[in-house]
Length: 81
Image 1 (spheres, rainbow, N blue to C red):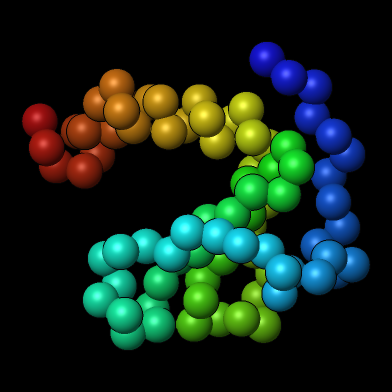
Image 2: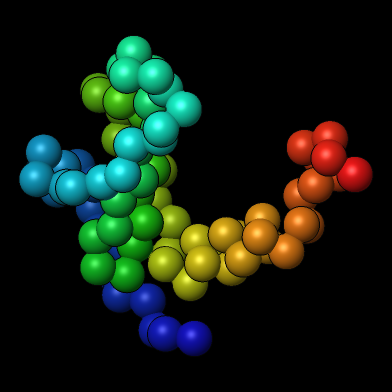
């Protein structure tokens, strides 16, 4: 486990330079989820609501959540028993 850096102040970040991955499920229509990394933080934003700040998650927490998805922890919620 890594020690998290101080939570960035999103109001002071230039997010226009943040490179992220856009969901491939949008079909190019602009209704996408974009995920990017800034240091020890994962930023999740909605490409159609650019005036809203992104959600911010610690890297270790995001990694643990992704691993739990891979391990099937959310299968009952998603309806794939």
